Image (cartoon, rainbow, N blue to C red; front, side, top):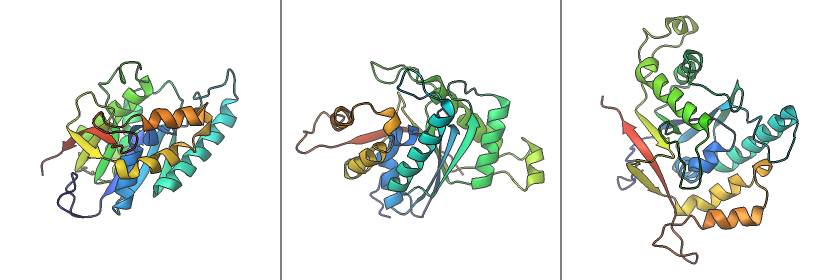
Length: 242
């Protein structure tokens, strides 16, 4: 890996993406994830809900919807080169940053022992000018933030996990997507279409594929054109000191 890479990683990293719903990884940072897997990093997903309320129709069977969304997520993950996908079973729409959910994520981090964790900025209530950020997105970010510091790296937190063989683990970095105050921007032009292919797998979430594609391709940077587009994904990146 070249020193010119904005990540400036000199070795293969294990990256754990912890978000709320199936499709969140692809929507929030799918092109960056595709970039990382193509660089040789191992990317894992952990989704805190199964997306049982993410239906576009007036009424759907939540059980059928969960089965469909899990299958869609696995298909999208295969396109991006995801190493493993874990589904936790918290109810969609009701996710809260509690001691219970924090412990579940601490357990997950200590089990997987990632170098890098990716989640969603818990302080962002308004996603773009025409969107309110889903409360599950913010809750997921808060759960992850509080699990990483101070709990996952301190064995005095949840000492019962030691009985499961899960010792303390300190991650090296956290990347928060959908941040209003990003400090790291990645040029993802080369993997934007791969992201789009992965998003196409989430058919239950997309009403009009042609309209969707047009909207996604219009997210190019203001200084680029449709004929020669450039795409970016931005993050609030925290690199912990040794």
